[in-house]
Length: 111
Ligand code: AMP
Ligand code: ZN
Image (tube, rainbow, N blue to C red; front, side, top):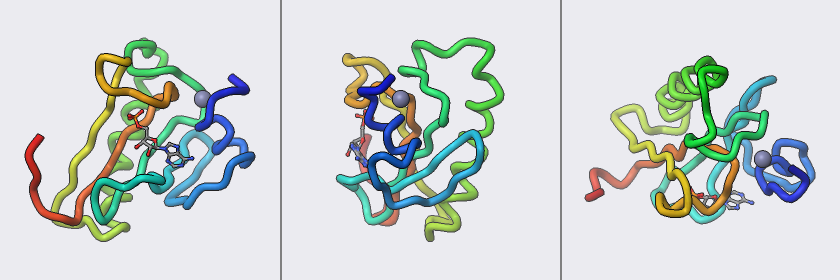
């Protein structure tokens, strides 16, 4: 996966504005934020997208979703936030390393 930009961020080869890290996940701010607060949570182990997940990813997906409200609160989004998982080219995915967008801080916005 040497050409995966998020694997390079996980490996420390490309810098990021880190929000959270442990041995399984990394969260960092989006380089092109769509809201005052916008970060992504990614599994450290490469998987292309939600279309490529199976039962073996159950724990990491649950962990990421449970991290979202905790990190959102720490980033000042205590009263609410939006999550997005773009999946596949037809789902608007641009970086093919699974990531959960967490963003907010500008009030409700249309889908
Ligand atoms: P998507 O695959 O469409 O869900 O979105 C990929 C996201 O990754 C976009 O919001 C980009 O702004 C973001 N992105 C791309 N490269 C970087 C980077 N080096 N650091 C942080 N965010 C990035
Ligand atoms: Zn990757």
